[in-house]
Image (cartoon, rainbow, N blue to C red; front, top):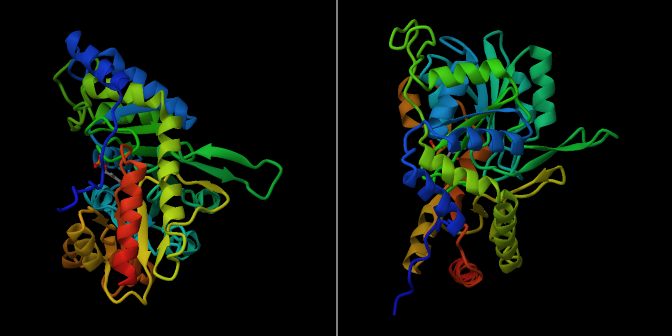
Length: 383
Ligand SMILES: *Cc1c(COP(=O)(O)O)cnc(C)c1O
């Protein structure tokens, strides 16, 4: 008898979530007009500790609009981690700007902030931080560099709804801040595998009302208030629907519960595999960070005689789905072909890309499923 497949992301929507989405449909407010949109924007911005939210179609368009809102254009440089989704680089190269990448920290897998300073040039305009897999980037050094060199900071918070960072940690002013609330402009995704999901969806959050207005105009075709359909600028149509926003409103209200469930699942994985340290490493949690464990990633040690791709196949044979880590930006064939990143090498990221994968981490996962994943991981790695 073969085991049923444990999916990598089993979503969890409550009756309350469904009731709000149904309300949007029942009241026929199904497009991007409707009260749930502004409620979602206000509630989520407030949860991040800022006062402006702009809901839009997805996390990728959120990044594109954030970069465009900051006025970044041809020849400008944006410093980012190499270990992230293509969306981060795409948002920069689409505007004719250049992504400049750094390696990752071996413990958090987030950008190694000590490598940023050496990459700043007169053309650098912004630093894009990506809080990876649930763990915040070490923000204070990034913000200090940005102040010193007059750079903007963009936070890609797609994977860290509810995560927090302890700012000014060695001082009497130490204070926990929410990811998404520490930069000039931040972006979220609400794709089906994110901590809050609207199916597809995204949001820009910021404390800067001008940026919010600009983003709102850019996602809505740059309509002008004086004469609709007469344009002085070209924008995009990246709006979110009221039905999606209704799903979001309901989940924002239970974000703490969602985070607790993610941390519970991660705790079970850490406990279940606590004696496997010689074979694999989990993402760490620094004492200045609250990791929301978007996914449970693991990196195989060099002694394991196969890589993550082979590990994934063996898991799959035992009925366990997984996903590989991101393919590093500096190794993307599409950019190498354009002459970007020639001869650049980032060893930590190159290693985790090849030796890392994440196991089932959806919010609907059960304790029994996690136990089965742990037992299977042990059996495969112990041989
Ligand atoms: C999911 C994700 C995105 C893109 O979001 P979509 O809604 O899928 O477009 C961007 N950045 C990071 C880090 C992500 O994990």
